[in-house]
Amino acid sequence: CAASAVVQQPCPHPAVWERVCDPSLGQRLAALGLGMVSLEEGDAPLVRDLLLEHFRNPALEVEGKLGRRSQDKFTAGISAESFAELEARLCAGLPSFGLAPGSAPPEAEVTVDRFHAIEGGGGFRNSNRARGANKGSTVRSSFACDDSDCPLKEPFEVLNKTRLSDCHIGRPCGDAAPPPNCLVDMRVSFSLETVVPGTIIEGMPLVYERHKRRQTFKARLFRIQLTHVLQGQRETFEVEVELCMDVVKHRLEAASVQADEALVVTRELVAILRELSQQAAVVKLCRKRKRLEDFLAVELELRATLDEPEVDAELRRCVCEGKEALNRAKQYLCGILRVRFSSVDEVALFRFAGRQVARVMQRELSEAQKGSEGASQSDESDLPAA
Image (cartoon, rainbow, N blue to C red; front, side, top):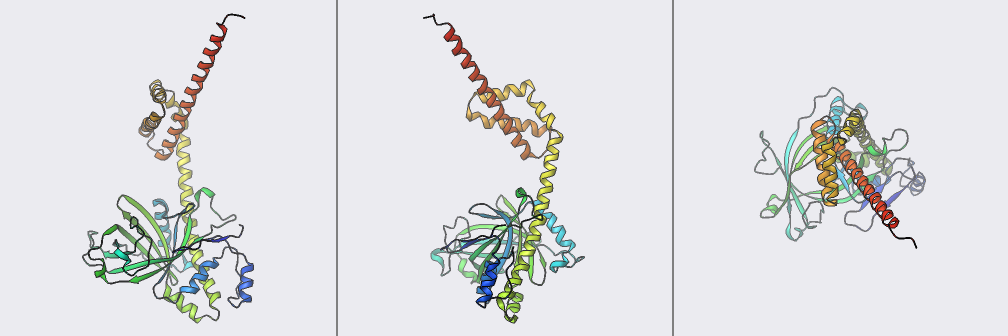
């Protein structure tokens, strides 16, 4: 992979895109007395630098997440299948990362988070996290739930969370990398979590609420948290790796060269994130392969459906009505296929139906063009000779 590091500045919450480091950076840092360990391909020097800058702050939270990154946005979460597979994998143990095999799975913790907009900022920095908050400051109140998953009356914590920076870690490369269409992206976030009085949210508007069911797998350096999140009709499956900052602070303060120890901590954090992302990507690839196999097994029967007179006539009728009826044609065909081939993935059927409607439209246009050309030639032959 080619080295690249782009920092977007200025920004209240700077976003960092970090692929792989330039090993020569390590030599320059060593010359400045900032570290003796040379950087290697795949290191995350910007994560290390942020850790060195903020590790003494008792409010610091450092967490890595799995998700999918587009050009300007990171969406946390993986598929339900990948989530279930990771849960089984963690329950079985990861000795190389400090998770002993054979341990009893952690109990799920059910909580409700409520985000309130603080008018006038409330003296807090803009957290820039709540949807619909008009970029104002927000405070999160968290409630434990009873056996019926109903929140208790009093929150067990009320926090203002301020994002310091986001680091988007580069994807692994080489033979061990998953296929390009099955990658899972990784982000490491640095935030400050400030405890605030519970009375501050009294009378403040509620921005949104989310229901969480979380399992936490604890190692010495970090906690891996698998969280099923419900927010209205939206459902996500989030994977987080949070550093235990008391352990990190002790290690850095005891180190003879803090930059070197911070790099070691960063490598351990990135390693577990890449291990989890690799597991999630494998599940995604297996699911896609099965979906393709299911489709190929009935492809001939799918295409035979298009030749049925009733289906062909309805598709032609919709196409002749114009572009406004194309979606109706696709929905009609997909509905027939969904009933007859219920074992095939619905998304695959919908895409197949869309392609077939497009072909019917092209066929109709081609036939209309040929008819027009034939009529034109006939008109020319009827003209009297000069």
